[in-house]
Length: 108
Image 1: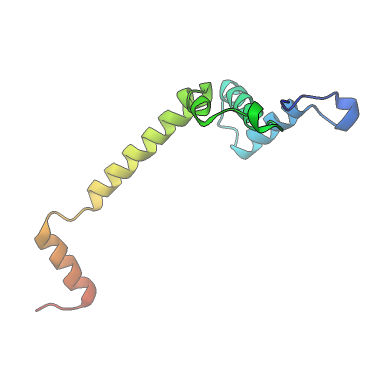
Image 2: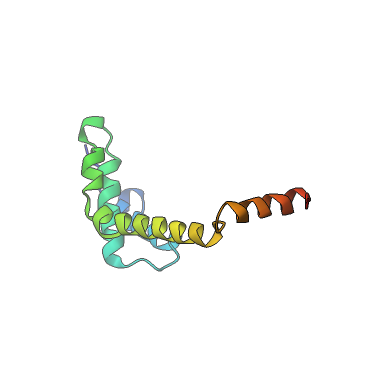
């Protein structure tokens, strides 16, 4: 059984509307409507009551949201981390030794 939207007369706004409003607020408004829709569709598939109805890990990785936004965001973070690491990496063993001496206060 999938999470189903319900009539607003029963419990307030439909589930889809509540989720999309929450996502938009939590992501500070910098998320497109297309991405919000893809996130909602992914969450809907993940939050099924019966385990056999839930999306598998492979299906999750193949979802529209992962292909359009999740994967590219992860790649950008990894590239940013690698670039930051390169900037902070010592120039070689001597630079590393100099850094250790400076930290320990041993200037022999």
